[in-house]
Length: 468
Image (cartoon, rainbow, N blue to C red; front, side, top):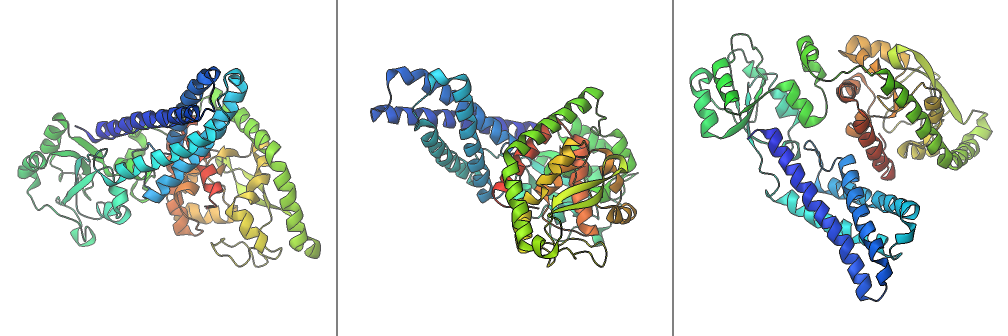
């Protein structure tokens, strides 16, 4: 069976089991309250409504925060954090929907909070079982055709066990033309004659997928063996597609023009999608602004008291950035650095930058410094989701040094992005290359569903102070 179908089967089983567990936890809470004499018969419909709402909302939000993604790369602690955030958000979703649409069928006021507590405990125990057993993770066997420079990318970037959670990597198989001296160092290598023995090796080891990562393809690949394996249901995957699928990024340094030309994705937005995105972003910006303005006012006052009164510097910071199609615009932020931070010219920011003020470190950690960019969204210069905009001084350098860097400007820059969720804070040419791998993944796969997933996961990042 091919790997995709197995991964899909695993996700379906997780969804079904967790749906049953959430429904039962919510129902058991109602029964417990009834045994304690706190429920009346009139609340039976309210219980049913809340059970259904909790089940649907927890599953949808679990999906949005990536708990059913086959490429999820989280230790158990990270999974617990996601379950906690998902359940808490579900509590508010159920509370709002119940009060608006089902006010006449409301359950006991203790039902929702107690349900959430029991749901969290139940799902954490279940996920612990899943995480530490093979019951839901019968991983398919995989081999890599190649053991040189390109194949070594897997060894370097997927070293941890959690990086290989979706497959069992049996071995790397060298082919002619591989730069072995610069290739695999510490992995299992199958020394076989690929032209004569590969087919038997695949059959003997129950191989479900072959990742093609040879340094030289022309005249070196065992085409007949690969052809026959594919006819027997073995999945054959290009290295770039494999890395994209398993890591959520595009290996920019391995890209070649024909892969871009023939790959799916990189869709041009239709006029309806552009208009819908524009108005949706404005609505979201106004909605967030309605709730955020008190925090923005307090932040402005604190910055002014901290050093604005003494130095006369503005609490807001305006800086030129590069937007969609390379067009410049001025981004707005709450000032988090000293007024003289760039007296010697533009500099890369760093994680523990000594130019950051004491209040600046706090508002950066929780993304409060970026709230004024809601005005950039309303003006149409930015979106809620997209690659973070960079300064022109750095863009000109990065375009020269980082391949395909300019392609990230095919979409509007955003308040939050795929790279910010997946790559730790960093500011250098090397960091920009790593972030670009995630930015191009977003450009290739941009959709409303991906935007929603990023938006919800960004909420998790902000709640836990994981600012990047």
